[in-house]
Image (cartoon, rainbow over all chains, first blue to last red):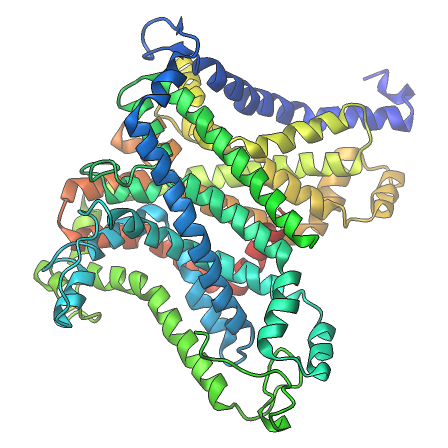
Length: 300
Length: 299
């Protein structure tokens, strides 16, 4: 490189920066941006992977609007979010709050709560599927039977199946949320608590006036993180209902599973792409909404 | 769990009862009833949390007729299920696939995410802001939206059913890039300047001076990327067709369907696919938890 030596230090920096970025920029353009555009474009087309693509305008979106299965799936997807997020938020906070005040064998207790986070969703979905089986196979119903309590239909019931599938998803995510909450609790300066103690304030006031307001950034992070997770639920549903994906009667089918089936069972690529655009919009709106709501709250 | 109530310095209670370990270093020497109760409830809750894992292991050691029994300890534990599941070699193959894919992806992420993070953090150059915003914006795009175009690409280029096909979407992540960028902020510019005067080129400065200073962040990123790829399901499910190319989760899913109601075999397969990460976790527990907190909060 004969010209390189004549460059100023600043110009050399520019050359190096772009040399470092060359491969990553190609990657992001080809593997992230092009496919994103492609998904939008495909959503206006009809294509079965083999024939030619045909432009159909908004037909896929109209079909989606008039598809009763889509609305069922839409409700399910939000049911996962609306049940899953508050449950996991409250449970993980309560655990973290008390774990934070426990010294004796603290590391051991924390390990117990964190362990499920290290498991794979597929493996544990199959284990929980076994738990939910009717007697004489399933663990839960066997427990109920030994206590003389009537059987519960978990995965075969249109009302119980969705929460049953949600449970292992909440369970697996708790450990992560607990340690994030504990990190947030540790970050609160001890002086606040000391001041409260001098003022003789009760524990409930300390919790609601000091701990929770100061935890706001942690809470926002966990709510956004877990909401996005629940809106994208797939592994648990797919593996717990392989004999009838999203069943019974589509009562557990989330949007990602519908996308998967439309694209890779029905090969209706345009329709599936339209569904992914809807998913993208939902995720965008939910994360913006939550950030906005919680920020508005903090200024009170 | 709220029954473990306590009063923080309530004037009505004598000082002896104002027990609160929040006040670092001021915890009473004697544990009172409330604390014991709190510990017991937390302990029972913890046991409940690990119970599914314990039952998975226990069932994998049981005979078929025993799985109807809710007892955690099998009457006659045996390893026949493991012999049976591992016999035809599929699980070994899936293991190998998963390890190769997770390792290459992790190394690739560590290299490129930190390189890009470092460049965005320490260099001033035209186009920096655009690159920054562009990579940041990919955080808003869900993987599920990209699987259809990725599939079309893989089909067009013949990447279906190959290691490359499984790996290519995850070779770099915006999450890792911003995590590393955050950590490079703490590397003083003076260090880099000193190395520059010593005659190192920019690549050497990054590799030999900056990288060793962010080792904890690299470890945290490695844990996240490895675990994410080890448990990844949707994309490997889509892109693989042949049994030999399955990763552990995809293989386990098809295995579960195949043996149907043989729950002791399913538990064995699940245990085989979960135990390695659990064992690694138990060995490096403190380190991994710290890494997860770091990546979770800074990323």
